[in-house]
Length: 114
Length: 232
Image 1 (cartoon, rainbow over the protein chains, first blue to last red):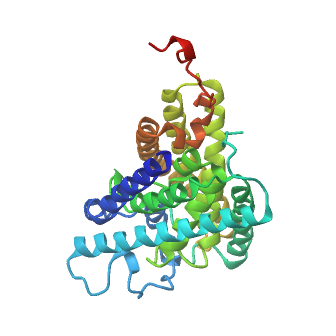
Image 2: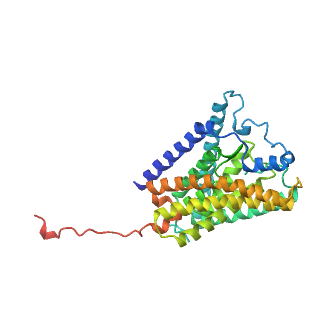
């Protein structure tokens, strides 16, 4: 029951993340962030070079070929959330697997903040 | 807070790359030792959530915005080791979106995944020790630590700029501006972190690593039932 609850929690959490990335992202401020603004004000913004993937299909949180700005941002957010979750899940599952194989513990001991 | 290519010279970026690799490497090893089975999907969720919320820039001052960094949020939810990995994963994925330069990835991981997570976690632990052991204390500690972690990450940038900045702008100027604006952004970071930690504490307190000391130890309870002869 605990594990099905956990699954429910993760699914609900993912839905929140998808909702934020897909819908709310379209309403985010488009002003430069703190570092960019400081660089602009203090005159070192021009030392920035274009990103290697500046012409990539997802550059600047847009999806190439989708013209509607909010939709494009939202879709890129959806893609990003799914990639991040997939990569994170795979990585942490792999970490767990290496531990079980090397026999470094059973994984049933409760985690306590040190 | 994402440093693009070019702000910091190559040697400094390389050195930060080594710091980042060390921090993430140790985190991978420690997370592998301590991670519980149920924490793998949770850590994936934390990374995905941070990616989503990092897209939500909020206005902080005239023509300036900020967004969550998520270091303390991740550390409080899944612990600092897994938390560091979560933020590093987010930063790597963001490269696909041309956010944060590839040659600056080490700098960005150092600032947000190492300094932001472990610096913020240290502040969180300190506050937890001072405040009473209650759920509201966890929420408040997480919020304050999150706010401070943004200023720590911004200061790490200033240090890197001092060592290898290419623009030649006086350090005092950069420091004052960076700390000033990131104190404001830190308030947003604190609010988002406290809200999120508060919700998870309300729904599944057992999933909050930074509150695991509040969990009553599991005790096998055997309810005394009616003795054999007593059944009517």
